[in-house]
Amino acid sequence: MTTSDTSPRPGMIERLLRHDRYIVLGSVSLVVLAAAWYTITGVGMNMSALEMTRMAGPIGEPMQMGGPPIWTRNYAVLIFLMWWVMMIAMMTPSAAPTVLLYTALKRVGRDQNAAVWLSFCFLTGYLIAWAGFSLVATGAQWALELVGLADGPMMTIRSKVFAGCVLVSAGAYQLSDLKTACLKHCQSPARFLSKHNRPGAYGALRTGALHGVYCLGCCWALMALLFVGGIMNLYWIAGIALYVALEKLLPRAKWLPILTGLCLIAAGLWLVLTAFVTGL
Image (cartoon, rainbow, N blue to C red; front, side, top):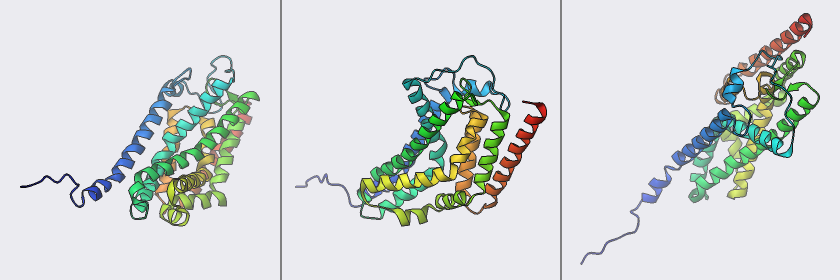
């Protein structure tokens, strides 16, 4: 008499786990799509990012849209969420290769049965680091509006001279040793993971947060350019996100940050010069 065997066939579990990279990649893609949708539609804001983009004026000359918003606790939380979700949409795609490499690394170690879960922990740590940046950016936005250097409704700098100074500062940071050091970590995920990999969920969270800190050190000045072009200007959001990805994924293009820094400095000086000439 034959009996049915309901136990998994040899290798079945291994073949299923081999698809964990697709699970991680699919999950990361869903996170990016959700964050992009939130950013574009401007959930909770008076205008969507599409409307903000259509109404964007020249740098330093935002369209006048009435009185400034009142900064309540709820409004501050909304602005923080706007910044954080926007950072998730902009930075997660360039972090995806590191997340996938981390997943592959865990699959061959003692944590192989929890590779997918630990990858989510790693990504969570990475995004927590950008939550810290978003908190600082929210405070900076409030301070700029308070002193009259930023237009509240359009969320952009209202002074050509100050906008030019931001461009020059961002360009100078592109040429700095700190930028170069942080970029090397972002461009070499295998070296980073071999040095900072730790076991367990807390170790994954810690490693992801540390990677986020290096990424933040590499890109924070570029994100400050959103104050110049408009925080919810989709052209600037997409352009900066694409540039960040190119910096990380093209490690041999060492000329790229240098060229970008020089261009930003030149553009900033030109903006300041024209502001003085025209008296704006």
